[in-house]
Amino acid sequence: MKYISTRGDRSERAFCEILLEGLAPDGGLYLPLHYPKVDAAMLAKWRGLPYHELAFELLSLFIDDIPPADLKALVAKTYTPEVFGTSEITPLKPLEPGLSLEALSNGPTLAFKDMAMQLLGNLFEYELARRGETLNILGATSGDTGSAAEYAMRGKQGVKVFMLSPHGRMSAFQQAQMFSLQDANIHNIAVEGVFDDCQDIVKAVSNDLEFKRRHKIGTVNSINWARLLAQVVYYFAGYFQATKAPFDTSGRSEVKEVSFAVPSGNFGNICAGHVARMMGLPIRRLVLATNENDVLDEFFRTGTYRVRGSAETHETSSPSMDISKASNFERFVFDLIGRDAARTRQLFKTDVEDHGSFTLSSGEFARIADYGFVSGSSTHADRVATIRDTWQRFGTMIDTHTADGLKVAREHLDPGIPMLVLETALPAKFAETIVEALGREPDRPAAMRGIEQLPKRFTVMPVDTQAVKAFIAQNA
Image (cartoon, rainbow, N blue to C red):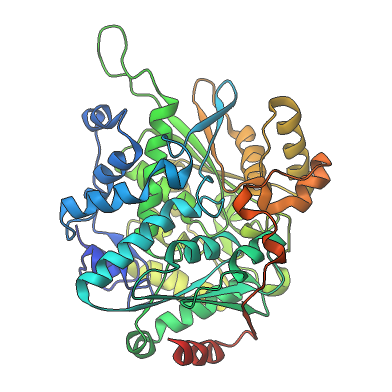
């Protein structure tokens, strides 16, 4: 399998090349030349496999430059009950008939980002050792990516992490998870802006090819294809759990559809669902849920993608989605417009990178229905009400982002089609809103108790790409 850029660079690269690279040289995002197709026979064969074996089968379709035995060992090392708490790794939590949560947040940092980041850490260490090289990872986080990356990379040989976050805009728990790490290979940079400013700096550094190559810069943000690929696995795992009766009485395969509702800020999590659907997984709907920062909801309702600047980006109680420019969105648009790289480059390079907007043609907008996407948004009042209702009726405590997903999921239920809401984090990460909704503190794993009181190690910087470059050069 080879990979190309969404913006027209037709140089075909192998998986391990793009693993360490992040953005393509032309500023685009990598996608495979084609999506491998799965059929009913493959689904029947994979049904019932342990999570790590399912992951190996799926990843093998996209990775052919790591020996199968090595890939199998890396995946088995990653997805264990010891790391993720259960043998299912992503168990379903039924709420009511036809509506369940898919638990993705049982990893080390209590967020779904661990599902991909733990694998990415092992892949990086493996490939760097194979090459005898080092890597400086540059990333941006609105809350969960940073801690997941740092916990996955801490102590890894040949890897240093430089993580940008919006100063003062994460929950106290999220800040403590990152800033309390004292590992020498971890560097936290608190940027005096919003998440989109952090993301813009990461892209600007990545687009400086000379600096990027001299300092061996890579990325763990969801612009990294390897991370998105790892997320595809839990769509298949959720599908198999939701459709446990695969055959009718005559022994014939019964193809069932499932819908997924996904809280979405940077479009990476739901883009993995798009890839799974393109591969042939029977997904009826991909329900995109936003908070008050509803850029993506506006797009799927109107066909207009209107990027907001810092002043228009709301600070909300689901802060990991306080994003007004979704860095993975380009991958979907590339597929939507028939993989027209020139058109993709025109839309994203000309308009979006300058905090502008674009509007699809009527023909392009009409195709969205063919990809299964629908959308909706949620407010602070909505999420508080959803958290309270879910606790009172089902005895299940959910975090603010999952509440956004559950609220919008209920607007798009289809009779007879299971709806799985992807859980994005555990409630402990957003205690203030949980207390507002329920009048009690959320439970917290023993290892995370009192982390807000630990010594913190971070550097505050202005929104300045050159200052970040200088910091990297000094500490790489």
